[in-house]
Structure formats: structure tokens, C-alpha cells
Length: 96
Image (cartoon, rainbow, N blue to C red; front, side, top):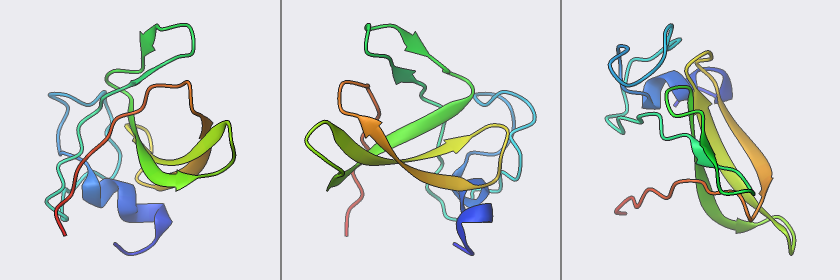
């Protein structure tokens, strides 16, 4: 997808119907059509609905943390990060 700095934009749905402005770099060149989904915090609250989307990967970082990837309305990049397993991230099934 051209590297971490621009991959997020190539995954995100264009426009601001779902994403907050400016939805930086969004082209959806990949056809993945990532829409913002927010996440669930450890206390059960939901947040960041129009601003980001994080997905769990199948890789564990440690007993309490797993790897995730995410995109944001404010950046065209895509980031990989470890996150506390008690957070609620989305899961997107992709057929091989």
C-alpha cells in the first residue's frame, strides 16, 4: 500500500459522511472501505466514533496485550500498536 505513512488513506472511505473532517489522505484505492468505528474503553464506554478505527490482529503481544492496527480521520498513515486486551476493537474478516 506504499508504506505506513500513506496506507491508511488508501484503506479509508472517502468524504466526511462517516469520517470527521478532514479525513486526511482518504482515497480508498484498496477497496477496503474502512469506516470509523471507534472503540470500547476498559470501563465499557464507547468513544471516537467518527475519528478512528482500530482492528485487532490475530497476534498476541503478551498475556495482557494484543497487536492491533488503526487509522484516523486526521492522518493518512496506518499504525500498528499493542493494546490492552480489555479494550474493544473491531474485527474485519478478509477472505484470502
